[in-house]
Amino acid sequence: MPRLEASRVRAACQRAGWCAVLNHLAGDRLAAALDRPGRHVACPVHGGVHGDGFRLFADVETTGGGICATCGAFADGFALLQWLFGWSFPQTLERVAEVLRLDPDQGACTLAWATPSRNVQRRVTLPQQRRSGTGATLERLWSQALAADHPDARVLHRYLAGRGLSAADLDPEALRLHPALPYWGQDAQRRSVLGGHFPTLLALVRAPSGAPVSLHRTYLHTHGQGKAPVATPRKLLPAIAGRSLGGSAVRLMPAGESLGVAEGLETALAASALSAMPVWACLSASLMQRFVPPAGVRHLTLWVDKDRSNAGERAAAALRDRLRPRLAVTLRIPADPIPAERSSLDWADIWQARAARCLA
Ligand SMILES: [Zn+2]
Image (spheres, rainbow, N blue to C red):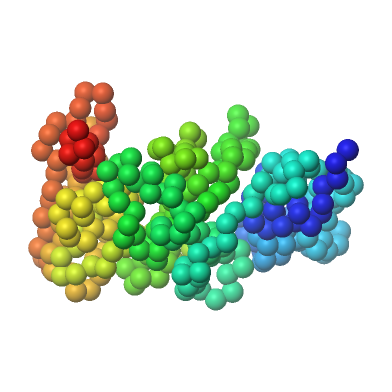
């Protein structure tokens, strides 16, 4: 039987992130500890009278380790899993490799992805000492991702071209492509299940101050022909501890005195293509309603999604009413009715239809 090399499995775990691996194999036992790495919770093995004997290390995302005051210290995720389940080391390697879909026959690790483009090595500014949680995940994924002009980012060009949009001038401080991001879904028992690896459009969400708050992910089809065939192709990380999503947006291009905002990334890019104004993406109607424009903006244009529940229009009206005393606000709502077979009509749809007509 082909042997799994421990170093290869360990490297794959670090790339995927140990929290995801532990969550998959031991999510029910480690739920409390995974929610708060570095903080004490009840020991998943011996329990304990005071319920505070165990903690995962603050750097669990890279090591997978943890410690119980009674049971002992487990330097890495393999030792931790052996202790939790009573598995041997080879058994543990096998289970972890299964989760990561590592094939023992294969010389190269299936998770291996391209080296990040040298021009996107600039690190995002995060609060100090964030070794786990959203801050660490964000920093890791962002540093692994490629700028749109990287030769290995062609899938992003294909995806946007399918929507009539160009990837030519995308700002690598706002949008990047992760070549192979694990997609975690849920099975019938609501346990995390690895659904595969997909090229993924990453969008950096910034607070009104400009500080990074979260990362939005759009999982793409392997060759960029639309979104990935998964239950939730768009996902937003929770806000970095101590920071709020309220007021934030994806700053797709520098704002001037005039700025537009839209809900979706594609909608914002389409609105900018239609109007030649900078347009940012708020990612949802509720975040659009809470948007806070940066200082210096005097005229804000809201590129509104038309949907059957009117959520987009209500959010835009609420934002206008909140900001109006201080700046000029214009609403742009699609004039056409929502097509019978659709639930919404946005400026990305309008731009795509126009681009299709131009090509016809
Ligand atoms: Zn214990």
